[in-house]
Image (tube, rainbow, N blue to C red):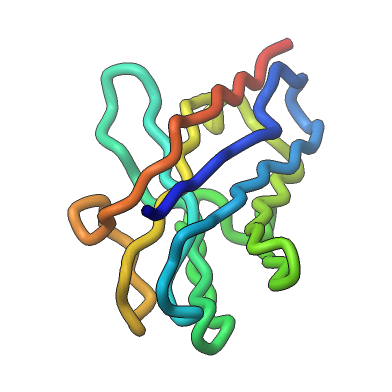
Length: 124
């Protein structure tokens, strides 16, 4: 059974940084896409950043490119989203997601496994 456990959300001021973690377990394969979506109140869930464990290819949405980085620790089966220069528009619930595929996927309907979500609030 695949499980994704997120941590690291919180309340920060504009310009601050946060690091989200997602610990994955239960995958039969060591090749799959994993990453982060976010959903703000009244808005659709959007893809933020993803990494393929097959080849370490990555994706970043235009809204976070240059500010966020994604990385993984194979030994811990954990993926990290480092968020720098945070803005109020980054405020949302952030969800870790993964699925069985050898492609880097970026849309919510393409993902089968989801974490419980962690709140990120950027406010002065």
